[in-house]
Image (tube, rainbow, N blue to C red; front, top):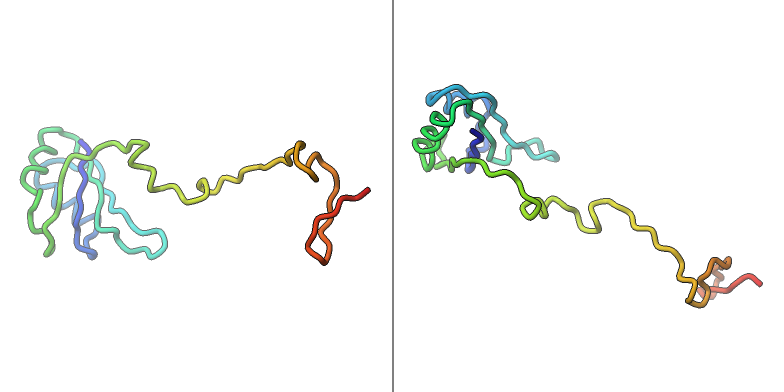
Length: 126
C-alpha cells in the first residue's frame, strides 16, 4: 500500500518516517521529497507498506497525529493523473521548440532571401 504523508516538520528525515510507520508493520520504502534547487525538505513524502491491513492501520492511527511538533496528514496515495501533472509543465511548452515556416502566400515569404538594413526595413534581394 502506498501512503502519502504531508505537513511534516522541515527537520524530519526519511529514517524517522520509516521508524514511525514501522510500529504498524513492515515498511518497504520511504521517500522524503526534497526541493531540487535548495536541497531542503518539501515537508511531504511517501511510504510503501507491504501489507494492506498494516498500511490502513497506520493511516488510521497516524493521520492528524502530532509528529515532531506538527500535526501530520496521512492518507492512501493516489496515482498521478494527467490533470494533476499540469502544474509540472513550464510555460512555453515545457522546453519544446516550435518550428515556424515562412508563409508562401505572404509578401516576402516563399523563401526569398531578405536582409535587415539600418532603417529597420526588410528588403528582398532582386
